[in-house]
Length: 323
Figure (cartoon, rainbow, N blue to C red):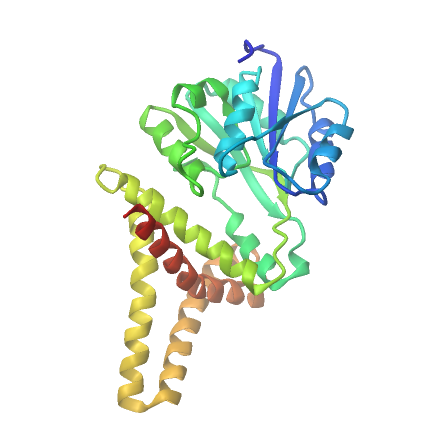
């Protein structure tokens, strides 16, 4: 591990088969270098079979690291970069994300002014919401109200010393490694703060139902993994969310079955669709405060309902894996 330098900002970019998006991600880092800081840019490749490594090596100033052995994961890739980083602050970036103008300078300014803050992150904006309905509705998930939060995602700026003092990311976790680290950091006295500023544009690259379903299953795995880890603690992180992801689909099935038995299949379908639409309109009303178009807000509300099915499946897989 190299000694930290006070005027170095380390940037750790991770990727696996990101040849279509990696160049833009790396170029944006250099275009938005904070004034007065030397940039150390580390790209960690998790075993790409496309041109990702070649592209990273073609960008001047990028050091390429290779994740070797074992199952690739974001936790392992980030840890490899973090252990090589020289700077006291580290900006973590996923290879499908492009850092926005002014973000790194503002985050550094915030962390330097707030020694109690361990991590700063900002708003994520979906890059191509027009390309698919899945990207449009899932992109709305990115918005986080500014202020102190319980966790952040993979794109975030950290004090490197805090991550090291708390044992880095847990490499035994395949999904949900960021909330798990944030939990440990917060309970050691750190603070995770969301700033009201665009941080990255993110290309979800989701064009098929299979991708949409898989993302929701992975989210369920993360919920259950974190809930199972901390359910005995005073702060039972994601336990409520996990229970709701089981309870709501179960309630829908009960309502559907009861309506079928009493009124028949056609009425049962109408009842459950009406229930979903009512909940979707409730969610849409809240979303309209962010000036989201009504049709998009309703679609998002329906997405929030439907996604509980694959999330519950992911939770079952995670919990059965623990057993």
